[in-house]
Image 1: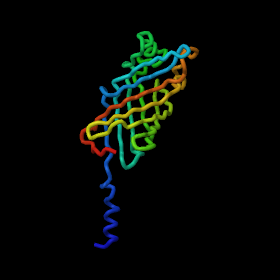
Image 2: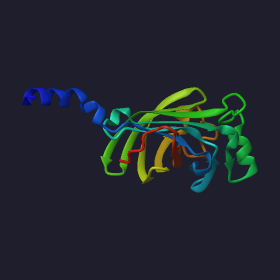
Image 3: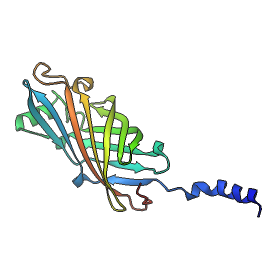
Image 4: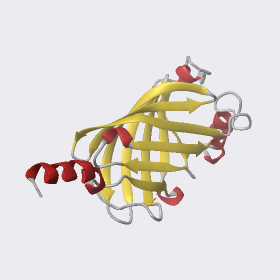
Length: 191
């Protein structure tokens, strides 16, 4: 076999040598979201969301194939007191009866350094879609689990959540912990 033939075979079959993307299911028990904001001149208020579902795809060979997709049920929202929980779920804010879920789908995942990423995507709240950027840290990745921590901040008025603007700050900080496990049959090639 000539060198040219060997080189041609390597070029033609090299895609088969690349690591396959790893697909993860988000673990509802290990995933949670915390919303934080200031009200009445600086008092910290918080709300928690759980039962998050979705998928994470990591492709060690092509970051353009990386994707995070989550669905968050608004009914799981619990705030720091029962009145605030009711207000947030009502049509004053999230309107859980009419818009039962919040969704996020990434457009691109950019590696900043090993284990640190910038995730660009679209957040859908009450059918209002706005671009957001998440700062994501890979906490753990093994053949049996994936743990990510992400943070971002949004303008609540950008999503039509602008009630009580005189006493509640517009900025909402979002803190996300995602636990996931590989889909059965997915290739496991930790990055």
